[in-house]
Image (tube, rainbow, N blue to C red; front, side, top):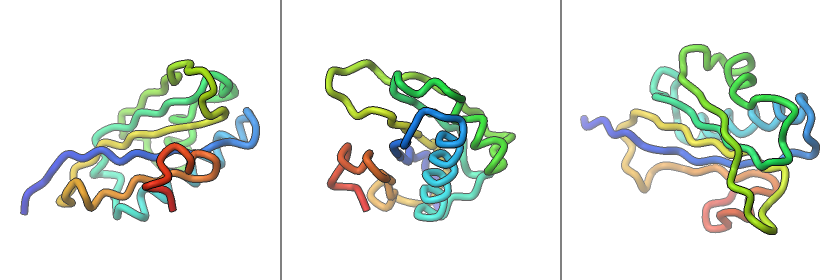
Length: 123
């Protein structure tokens, strides 16, 4: 059985820039990404979180660590590029995982207002 390194993308929008809204969004998005792709925490190599410039209340990675037990997973948080007319209050994540799944078996997750980013992948 071959093991591959794959990226799993996800995005979600927040209602407001508050610590609680960030926590709720991180938990909802990551739980869906883990479930849909049958990911175990020990198979996650690292996670990268990005936020639009209007999200400043908290670090998304903190909530992955505290709420979902990502203590041993290396994580970083960054700001998205400021692009005119881009989606506001958007949190994105890239999980890099070790898996037996083929690239076309990976399910990328786009929730709430972020579903417009990749309508071809949205559920």
